[in-house]
Length: 452
Image 1 (cartoon, rainbow, N blue to C red):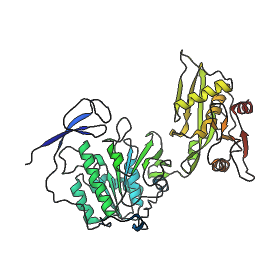
Image 2 (image 1 turned 60 degrees about the horizontal axis):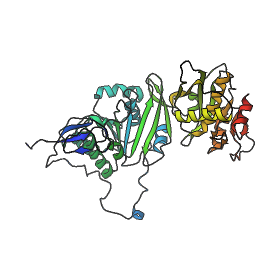
Image 3 (image 1 turned 180 degrees about the vertical axis):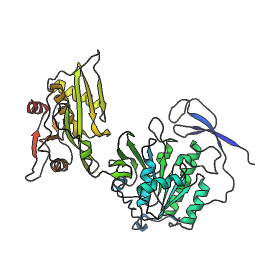
Image 4 (image 1 turned 120 degrees about the horizontal axis):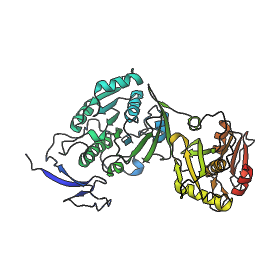
């Protein structure tokens, strides 16, 4: 037996050290360096399957590379395709992270059951019978999905070589282990080695691989940070397990935009795509309430109508509180300072709470005017009309600034039945005879006079 070799790794960033030390030189974190057993065998009978290799390992001039065959694979899931940028790229490695019980396995199993391609779903967490029970609720008639319960990468590649699937799904990367490394599953060295083997397989055979990743209590994907650098796409599945709606975001995407958003509704038969998210982000209420305003925002290419709620009350304690959910707290403080300086509202001694409904986070500056409107509505205890919405940025000098793609925002508001939209007068609008009334503003003082 070969001599056991150990090394020291940082659990935060994955940096390797020859001996233990208290602080990591790379990420500056304390007490994150642990000892792991590593030993790569000198010889191994395993190799990446070459019988399905589709690419030649020779250098080519860029103009000689044929990209016509690298079309994206349609997942037959509109929201998943939107976030990826049109579908799965051949030979890509996609990592999906999310909290326990949020629906990561359900999402990828549902996609694998929809695909007309030969799909291999590898599970290291559930048995084949457990997956069968879930599949019967989603799509029991699929004949192209194969289920494998295995955690050893060498055995997985043997089955891949025999089956030759068009797409591989791994649930999850933290459960895999390789004979190259003697440390336990989920350790930094195992995760790095297993991911490296999967990357080599994906690139050599042009087979896309989807990975499910666990997350830590801080919300980051478990394992070394280098894992997110190694893969091509990093997706985050968000939501509250006590609510039915789930949000899919792209934190990294080498083949598309990271601004797109996918929304699902969790049902007993799986995840339903939400094609019109504006309907679920705006609450249905019979009576008008103060502190509510509707903003027209954009997530990638998709326009969304979201509801902004504000509560302004007299500070009970000495220091007034400023709290924002789904909105940048520093930007909230800036808008409060503009209202104090330019509009004459005394909000310095009042608590201000702001919430973006639906559990989403918005960083589009076009919702500034809706935030200001909701704050003024709550402060004066006067409800805004339900058919009024806003799309403008507020500057430090109190000017109402233009925002991009204003016509798309106006058309979305018009489609949902709003009668008036407040925008900046400096926006160039070429729409002819819009049904919705477009109210033009130049400074915050004009807007305050409109409301009062």
